Image 1: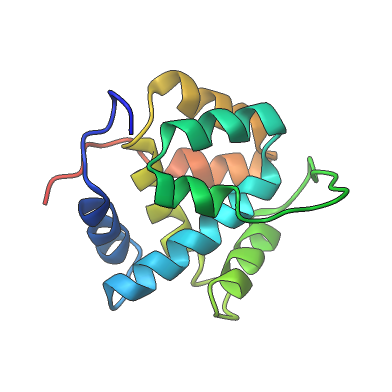
Image 2: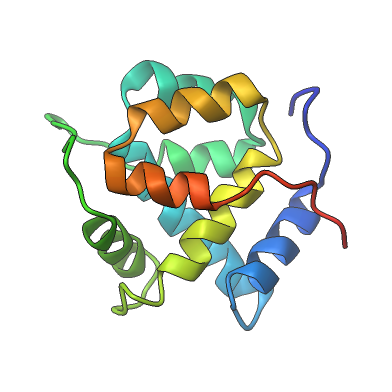
Amino acid sequence: MNEYEAITLDEYFDFVMNAGLLLSLEHAERWSTGVLKTLGTALNRRTKKALAKALPEELADSLNGVFWLVHFRDPNQTAEEFCGRVARRSGNSNGEFAVHPTVAVFAGVKNLVDEELIDRVAQNLSPQVRNLWEQAEYTPIKL
């Protein structure tokens, strides 16, 4: 945990469930894991490590949960490709629906880290995925 953390994990998952149009906390946990694993493959090593250090352990484990022996990030990854991967990792096949939980998870993560790291993550993403990241507005979660 860090000094910027304003919410608990329970509040985070409740926020993801509501903002992501999900039916249960279990769905929120599964989609959060899928989004963070996919995000982990889209970031460079330094940014991924800094983000993992700033997140609670459970979320950091998801971010670091995908191992690639040789991995080349796609600097032109589309939002559709990203959301399709998120959907498959979350046990779903609808990449269009995945936009909602993806943006919700991004917003929840932004509530757990500082502004400098938020900007650093944005600069590491492809233009279309960066647009999704920026759609997830940083607003303190009020329950």
